Image 1 (cartoon, rainbow, N blue to C red):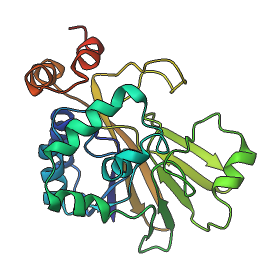
Image 2 (cartoon, helix red, strand yellow):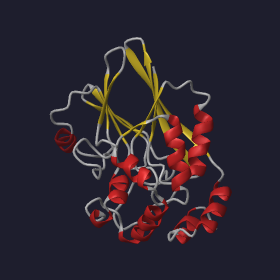
Image 3 (cartoon, rainbow, N blue to C red):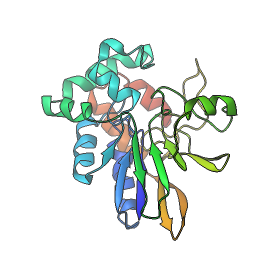
Image 4 (cartoon, rainbow, N blue to C red):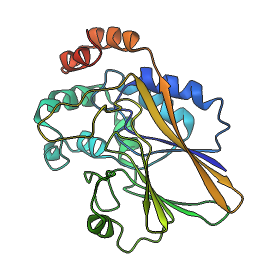
Amino acid sequence: MRIAFLSDIHGNYTAFEAVLNDIKTQKIDQYICLGDTITMGPQPIETLNALRELNCLFVKGNHDAAVLNPELAAKYEITHYLIPDLHWCREKLSADDFKFLDSFPPMLPVTLPNGIKILAFHGSPLSPTDIIQATTPPELLDKYFEGQDADIYIGGHSHIQMVRRYGEKLILNSGSIGNAFKFAYSPGISPRLLPWAEYMVIDQVADSVSIESRRVYFNTDELQDIVKDSGLPGTAWWLRQYGK
């Protein structure tokens, strides 16, 4: 069984389309989206429609929660300069779109046919805003995973791909499809984006698994042209990312 984990698309359908083309070569049995689907980028509806067609399973990210409850944007750690983008995105959505986003659970347990247990989430099992990185202290990991019994934990949110041992378990981050960060997030510092999309494939192999972190380049010039025509409030930020 091969599962593709997709996360942090952030309304960048140009990047997502490149991933979808790559996925066609991967013989995937199941798709799981780890949240933050449509906000920030210029193509929320195209992204949402493509996710529906994939027949994904989902977990809810902090941006998904904020789209549903914009009055709680600060709780979900949406930076103040992204609030106009949040409302721009909301204006594009139908009642069915809101209902669809609201159906995403906070966590998703998956058991492979060989018995290996996977727990999918956005930030951590406790909160979609928690950030798990390679440097996160073990005592904080103990707090995040207390009471959980999965063999593999996989999330998104940090926009940095990661494979990390946690005792006899693994902690994974599938990276970001729409906003792959050049550097780990630091408060007060605007992130820089990379010109590729990231996702991860977990494949059952006998009594074990293989893990593949994939990187797919996409057409940043095409994305920038779409951004300029979109009316997105955050257009200037996007144009700075790729030198335009």
